[in-house]
Length: 262
Length: 262
Image 1 (cartoon, each protein chain N blue to C red):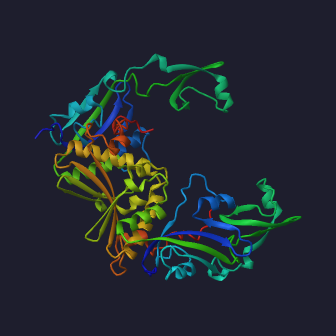
Image 2: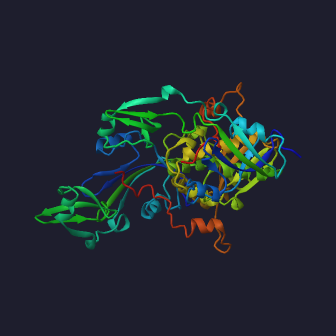
């Protein structure tokens, strides 16, 4: 069965710049390592894609439709369908003075951040520095080498895949994450360790929303997504994960009247 | 009906140091203002107390039992039942050198933090600074003036009161917080704005756990507490709170393949 719109698949890929073969992104650890872009601690594995959810460039997504499980393909994407052409107005001359003020000595190729914009130094000529604020892949034709590893049929597996893609916490064990779909409601109880991360609530809310949106828009059995944090009395005899996390209840309930408001 | 163990009440109080009448904590805005301890932006109102949950000094809690709704009482608590006697070993001499290293000029009464401990400078004598690391209320006999405003009978109201006390986000509108108790499970759906706060997930998890623990230990109808984040498709015609928060869906689902891993 070839891949159709609304399918969920697991995809391995490597993205390269066509002109020089430079790898800018990949799901393969050894390829990332070789290209010098390996991120320490990252777990490299195929990503879950919901075809039609525009998780990837639409020019790439379109070319996945019709592939068979196990099939490999090299997909070429011209720059205008990838990260855009270079916009010459985004190449700007900046007085050297602004760099000196911050004790920065610019050199060609140096990545810099100016007024919240990311750019790369192109040339340094006396008092003026040319900085390119285009996306680093703008103007480049791209090649994706893809391999369809699997088509995901089970809706629970689809949702776990979305959690993997969007929630993005390497500490969450998906085997300890419970997903149940009932009467159109996908109920997700994350690995207890998810409650102990240091991201802000807002960041995590946006991640949850991303998971939910792709799920209710692309999985027919899902109309609504609930993330559930559950707490109940830990009976000492049946020590389980909950007991591991909350331990001996060393975290005291704050005593309200005991604190002086300083 | 006098207050009994396991009751939930709303309590107004003012805590004073017995010796000099200095107010160190209060639920009354005007009292806080007068005492110079008013916290800007804080909403002053009676706190919800679960009698028996040790939210407050047990010596205070014990004396609330037997009071009637509307009753006022002045409760004296000797220091040994309040914040303890002064521990002379927590008064330490610190070389002036350590302060100079950090460009700090100590003076009597100055609050300082040293190696993670909070203290107050007592005296400065030449090269040595005496710092008191006891609790600021240690050694002080305390007076609480309390007024029982209400006994809370409804279990949903009890839980909302606990959210107010422990969750501690002034932006959460309790009227927009939904609590349902069914078959022993208290299901809490917080005001949508709770998802956008800047505290870490861990801080909020501990707050949720505090709410849950007091609830399942002190409300007979509750065995288990669930906090539920729900997401569903927003149909543009029926604009409601959810639509307000997520607006025009300007927050894009991240495009996985579009990002180069820098």
